[in-house]
Image 1: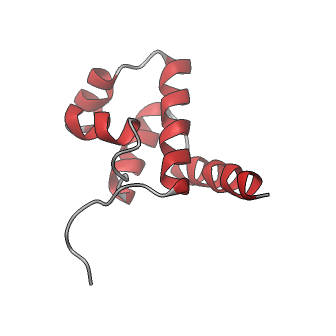
Image 2 (image 1 turned 30 degrees about the horizontal axis):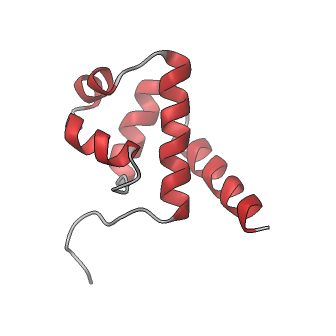
Length: 87
């Protein structure tokens, strides 16, 4: 089992990050706001939002909760975009 830490995101991870970015924009939430509210460091959020790191399940849950959406919907949306992109 690989325990080297979060890995670079694949296509689904990038779509999850895109959904989070879109929600942040709609709700006018900054990275600093999200970091304070969730306890996730701003440097981690920056890497996630720049498609350089995957979110953990716990991190996604905290972010979704703060943004007022269901984490499952973010994942479903990401999967749908991935399927459509793969044609």
